[in-house]
Each structure stands twice: as C-alpha cells, then as structure tokens.
Image (cartoon, rainbow, N blue to C red; front, side):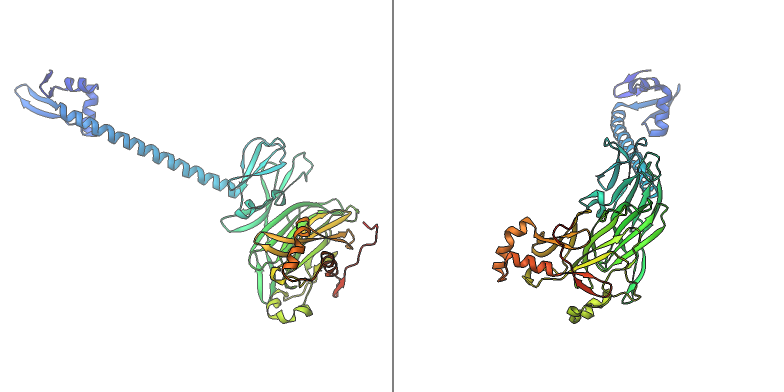
Length: 438
C-alpha cells in the first residue's frame, strides 16, 4: 500500500514515513497515543494516518518528551545532591571527611564554613564544620593546635569545634587521620546571685601545653555567652578534666610561656573584671596547679555605690582561686567621656624576660582606642609604662581638647601607680622593678 493525498494508507507506509519499524508504530499507538485510524472494507480492516495529524503529534511528542526527560534528569540530580549533602553533613557531624592520605597535620585554613587541615606542603588532609565565631577569628592558631602526643611521627590536633544540632561549642582532640578521639563541652554548676552558668560557653582558645613532669595536656579558654565570665580549663590527653579556673569577666587573651625557666609552663592571661566594675586585669597560673575563682570576693570600697549591680558577680559558694599572681589596673578618672565601661587588658608578649600587657584606656572611635603598655618582669614587678606609638603621638592633643591638665609623663606615672597586686587578703601596690632586673 502507499499514500493517497494527505493520508498514509497501510501500516508499512506509516512506519516508513515515521522511520520506525511496524512493531514500533503499534507500540507508539498503544503507549503514546500515536493517531492511527482504521477502516473496514471488503479486504478487511485498513490502518490509516493523516500526515498533518502525525506531524503535529510529533511536534507535541518531542516537546513533551524533552520536558519529561529534563524533568526526570533534574529530579534525579536534585535527589542525588540532597542525598550527597545529607551524607556530607552526617560525616561532618559524626567525624570528618578525609581528603587524601595520612601525612602529618601541620597547618589550617578556612574554606566557606569549614576548617581544613593541611600538611606541610599545604595539601588538604581532612576537614570539619566550624561555627561562625571560629571562622571570624583573626588568628586560627588560637583555636587549632598541633602536637605529636603519642610519638607515632604524626601530629594530633586539638581544636575548637561546634555541634550545630545542639548549639554547643566544644574542645575536640583529633587523631592525625581526623578520627575524633574525644569531645568536651564546658559546663559549670557555679552560681552567682542564684543564677547558674550551666553550659552556655563558647570556645575562644585551645592549646597543647606541657607540665613539669613532661605530661602533655590540653588547655582551653572559654567565655560565657551571656554573663561575660571566662573559664580556663585543662584536660589530660584522655579527656579528663584536671583543672578549672573561673574568671569574673571575659578573658581576652592567653599565652603560655616558662616565665621562670624551671621547665614548667605558666599561663599568662588578661581581660576585664566585672566585680571590679570593668577594670582591666591580668594574671598568672601554674599549668601544674590552678583552680577556683578569681579575686576579689567582695565589692571593693570604691565601688560600694554600685553594689546592687556588682553583687551579681559574687559567687554563692566562695572558692578562692589558686593563682601565682593577679593584677588589676585601677581606672584613671581622666577624660571620662572617652573611657569605656569595660577596660580590656591584653597579653601582647610574654617570655622569661618580660610580660607586655596592653590596656585600652580610652576609646576615641568605634574601632580605635588609646592604649598604654605596661611592661612587667617575669616575677611581676613593673618595669615600664609606655603609651603605644599612636597613643604617644595623639594623646597630648586629646588631653588638651578635653581640658585634662596632665602631661604625657604624668599620665605614665599615674598608670604605674594604678597597678595593684592581689596578696590573698587584699590589694597591694605593685613593686617597681630594680634596675637590671629581668
């Protein structure tokens, strides 16, 4: 059979027109609705098709087929991506994703919201999810540290980590291959004016340290997210808590060094003390023996008029702290308009020769302060008071503008006299270092 006008007569003619087999024509009719017609005559039933109908059907069929195929492919890809992302998230929460072989971890970098551990050559080894707080840290070495603690030739990693499902900050010890050896969160039952601290802490600093007996421990610094209190804690390599020192104000910085060259590292820390109405402070702890709560333990006489506010920073159950030394910087009532409510001290440098503590005395803009450096000997005697270079340059002009009748030298002398040291029973003026004292 053949064609007559616009009709295709016979199944073979239709198959030839569509470039299909006869079997495919019938299948397309059954499965896809190919428009075929049938007529009955003396010679039986004939199959017919109108060319125009076939052409239009092919156009519609191709478009629908393409759309269906695209939709199916898109849905498959999306399904695959959801499964893949879920798998990655599970691996990140339960462990880490390993990116290669097992060289020794030595460095760290940020990629998106991930902390990536690399080897000496910068090749990525493994990674884990991080909090936005950790990502925002300017110095990643403050929240990641490396040390071979089991003498296998590969570094273990101590890190500040974050459990997003529980909104908990933690300290984690990783093996060199990224296996989590343990996680620890900070929790405290200490209460102030009836309010317990609980576990609302964020991890601000993590460091390996060494005790005088050669034992490696993990030191961490935490700040409470609501009460503005700090805690310095120590875990052994098995994850057992061995020391805990609660500070009545945020701890802004912490450095480890052997101040007296006796083979034992000391912890030098600085920050602000809320019970001292936001004065800057710094202290020294022995890595072998520190515990308790920082001084003072009552409202100081000069702040009696603020007792209703400051009493919230007196612990309900006194536990006097064990520290080697603790210092406060009394507020200078000079240019009070520029004095922040909380004066923050920071450890700039510390070694067996000296400790440099920077005090942000005045705030002249949102991001700029006038700071004074106090240089102490390793024994805690005051060696020098030095305005930072920028403060030395512009401080005289500010003093003049705000009507302060003090010279720069007088300011330095007042700063020196404002430093007091905790004696165990109260505050004493800090000793001035003798000439030649280190």
